[in-house]
Length: 302
Length: 272
Image (cartoon, rainbow over all chains, first blue to last red; front, side, top):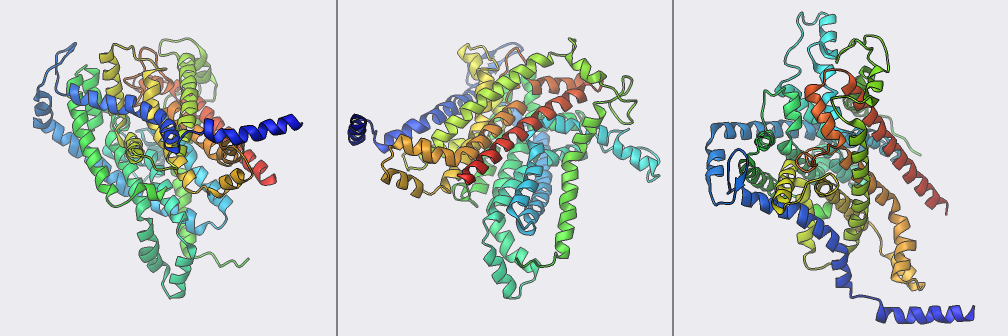
């Protein structure tokens, strides 16, 4: 017993000198795995894309070169511009809809549900579908919206329309609906997070000063919720700008998005062309995100 | 406790919320029901009898795909991604508690990883492996591609957790003579364990369902989401829905199990 105690104190006394590394070194050691993984699987691939976008290619292979042809072809074609505009149109529509839905859902959870446990239960109910497969959730709209789908049978059965409505599926409507379905949580969560951190006494003070609930909403809650809305916007806009599967499946091949155009080029092995597209898309997305980050400091919001 | 009367605003928003939940779960339940479609039934309602035929179909060997194999690969990949995400995010979270040169750059690199379009990551890693003469495979290139999606989530969650973590506990432990390892394993780790499990759940489910990043990086063997995506274009029987039901139920089980574990840990901590 005595020996153990003495060796323990000895150890404790010696440890700071022999074992403890300088704090800065520890920080670096702890951050190295993250830096290595992101360096190899994110930075390097993006650099590679930037390089390859200047290469030449034929039907089978790529040839190292320095051509601006891929960019000229991408930016010089009317189809590309139309595709970019179409993608931006989806982004704008989905953003506006998810912002409205996301805010009201988060507001309801944060200000109208009184117990924390109930808040968590309802929040989890919203979260669970987002942890399941996107593709399954996407195709689950097909039996609902299709020509013989649930909505059309209900409409025809109740006599509202005589012919099934055709534009429900394989249309821009279907694409936007499915995207809203897939991405709304990315708006709900950050807004919910900021709303939960609003000091409730602010709301009470406003009410005591005679503000109506609409005035409280417009002058107190919404201004304070802006950082959450900004983060949600980053998520939704980047997800929509990157989307190809929803556009492909839900539009039935009738609409295009930038990522879908890239995917088609990739399946034709036109990697340099896809790379040029990728660079343009990446610059566009990063500019949008940088613009939003000027409004909000993410590190403060976490 | 004083309870004010529910306002009209509450009821309107409650209905709005209920419609939102219906919007989230409604279509999913359509798939669930249609997967029990009778042997002669099609991809839409009405149900043409009820059978387990399409589930049985999943387990038969067939021309369309290899569900067993792709499921095993996806589950294995999910577990690998989960383990690495938890460990690396925890380490990075600890690192970010102190200021160090490059911390801001690394943080923004993680944020960038979140906003770079998934198909660009997929293309980049595909081309990189190709140029390095490496064979892409689900356990190498797709593994890395998934990490670029799960790690930022893990890092941001750990960042948020440590932002709220009071250093007083560690100071107390240190004052009582605990070494830094003892402080970490006996004080910090139990307190953040529920968050770590949450990060693990994110890591697993995001990887298990990821598909844009796998597109160019999976090599010669498909993961489950790729298999399903392939089926959307060429399968015209409810076997697609049966597969959807099976993977969704699997996801639900994983989520429920994890939440149960988190609740259990929280209860135990409150008791002690």
